[in-house]
Length: 333
Ligand code: TRP
Image (cartoon, rainbow, N blue to C red):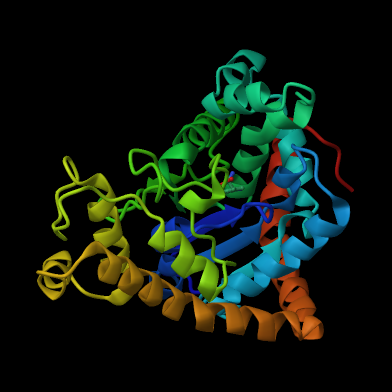
């Protein structure tokens, strides 16, 4: 890792059914972030088990996520790519940080409250401890930058609070991380309910295009996207939310500006327009999926990437953990 670059950390849960919104908002940017930062990208499988998982699926999805990272242009030589559970320091630091975190502040976290409502039959300690594990992820690597969406902002704030609390109790130990917030603009909404953000867990899966959707599915979903009765392809998010969302998708995937897209479909009907959006998305997903499949067929290579990533991560993480253990008074031999 280069000394002069700042460290950037990000993780994705392998159980997230990623949408084209996640691709545009997050994954797509990772390739370029590698030029400016020392990047560490994790498959957060320890976070995933805070809701019940099918073990065989979790294993498969972890592998598929690592393959997806690489298919999106993450270079495992430039960046550290690894699986969270392969580096035991995460669980260890989480435990120590638990003693610097208050039950009350965890009970107040928005995501904890949401998930408790959705998984009322399994409000386990891990669900509540989720933000502390995430703080451990970030703080272990002396991370300076964490790219986060709105939903993770509160978790990053807690990580900063915990770092400062620990630093104040002892002496500077952790770098206090900063958020890198995506530029507004390319927010992708649900195809059937454009007032909502496109989500991995939408009630109706036809409102979301998943990165794993095949060509026919993508085209069918876009064909069914809601528009309006005006039959004019014009960007006007307030009055034409559906059409504007489709223009955003077309622009993001086709590499054209919104104005160019408007001109291209001037005088054309919604049928032609929706088909074109579907095609541009499917054309972009096809090589990504093909590369992911190619990598998945080479398990030895993926294993070697994960192993190498975990070893490099472990080295950095151990250093931080050892500092923490020293400060809190753990006898070390
Ligand atoms: N909680 C994040 C999510 O679900 C994933 C995650 C785990 C993460 N550890 C992280 C993100 C550390 C940023 C930094 O999206």
